Image (cartoon, rainbow, N blue to C red; front, side):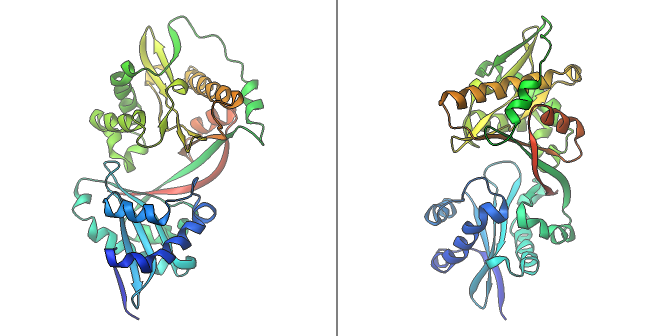
Length: 323
């Protein structure tokens, strides 16, 4: 059998469509995608615009597996998906694709980390990725559901004490942007997040992250549900909120300066943001179905915080990184 892995080319698009649609049909159930992936025409358009790159594995000239990655969204090389037709021979085919991927990204990886969330069936590839030097962080997805669970009831059970006079909660305003850069960099530069997204290590990198959040690059930014904690008028904490597809709320960044931690202030910020989102949902302003976030599986303090306000763990996965 002849086996070749290479970047997709213009004359491959017709024969590749069946393989792509096999992935698309499995994306939500087998790969834990929150939303359906791109339609095939949009996928082809993204390839042509160099927004994403696709390595295809051919066996006897037939496309049987592929790997998608991008270098255009962050300072990391983001490996998005590895898929094999009908999920057959995943590990064997993934080895060939990953080797070609590492060859293709050799220059990029000189100053960039590779990030790869092994969602769903991709967890079976952990041994493949480890053999190529990847390391892993256990990551858990938590959800606060607007309906069908007791998330709201648990949130309502939390009765916080009044803030001391020097603290004040308010909504996002662009005048807080420079302060947010400093707070988020301090909170994340030594965290596990910085292992697979090196932007967290510098203020310049955090500027890029926050710019993409507030300028709707990742999803729709929701400033009115983004909580800012002020201490004597100066921002010391941020709980950002955005929306995907107008209905799935996500916490992309949540940080508090170290000297203000341990006082229950993170809980107050998160509660404030949740209540704003609930008000939008209950008024019919936004059809929000859930609020989700991720944290490390061994970050017991964060897990306790989220559980206390009505979040529940959905599933966990290994976040792989190389660099």
